[in-house]
Image 1 (cartoon, helix red, strand yellow):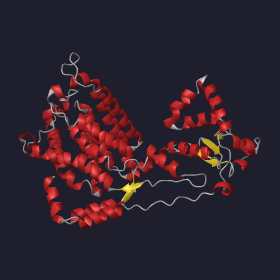
Image 2 (cartoon, helix red, strand yellow):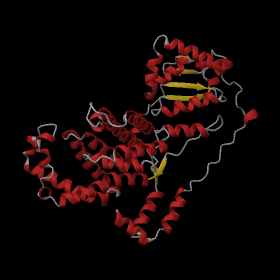
Image 3 (tube, one colour):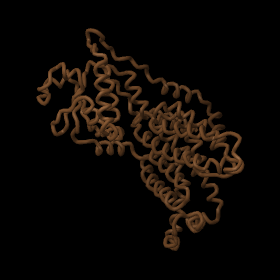
Image 4 (tube, helix red, strand yellow):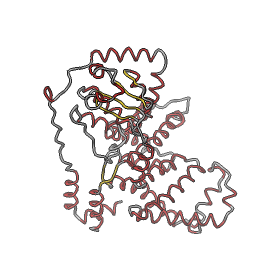
Length: 439
């Protein structure tokens, strides 16, 4: 029994990139949002005492809309911890109280929504990360938060969302004569009212059906004992995604399939996400963005745009360091370069003011809608006038070593690891055994 707390201690200490958690957060949030939208769409059928004739005692419209907004915050990683707490409260109200029907994904929602309060899914690809950058950055120091997190954040979600789901399921399967005879996949696929398409041509392949039935039975049995092992991970990932893609395509529970696929993405090797980012990153910048290094507003603008520019389409350069030496800007005086925002396209066209921002929005996928809006005649001219006014009144007493020397803040050490280690050492073996017995 001492191996189990040692395993958790080792997993907690091991740090890996958090990109997989961020991808999971986005896809899982989208699946959950779709289920909430469905609840909202059918709210009269679900909550009314007599649908459309005698409404419920209280209206559920506003709570469901607030829940949707909360999940959107989760997807974008904004105030993630607070959003996760509120999301779990809504889950208790709308999901945990359902007694008239059961849905596979609802059980998973309750467990995962609880874990989201504690799991660090906002380390990468989140607005929380941007807020942290802005909080600790200055004209003399740009803070870059760590992208790494404990591998336990991955394991605990997989264990609860997939492992325990399968572990519960195999007890029924091993007590079912149909599953023991290899017909567990064939039977539900043969019932016309619960399938989307006619699968007769597959169902008539006896040995294929038997093979899929036994593979599913064996796969779900061994998953909880093998998912954390490095060399088992990819085969389990392929089989699991294949299983739930089939569920998503052939049965009327597509969000169950998508939700499980989102969980399986946690098993994708973190090197794959790094490879994807490398392949999607532009080989050369599409735009060179010059900013005033001594202007606090300009630095914050650079941090915001740089954070959202995941594919590195824009190269940011300080005017004081590079701008005076760039021959493409030789027609502009130093004062002009400092009083406005300049950029240079790949074709060596010089842009300034609102046109620089418009070009930046064009190359940042998340801001592309703003590029379309700001390109509309009238809106463009209004934006140019607003930018001119802001440029005139912005704070121009630049931050230099003479008037505001800046010392990078000393960040407190991460004491979480020490606390967890101490708690594991103090954890009594009998209590731990009783806890496992309860599970």
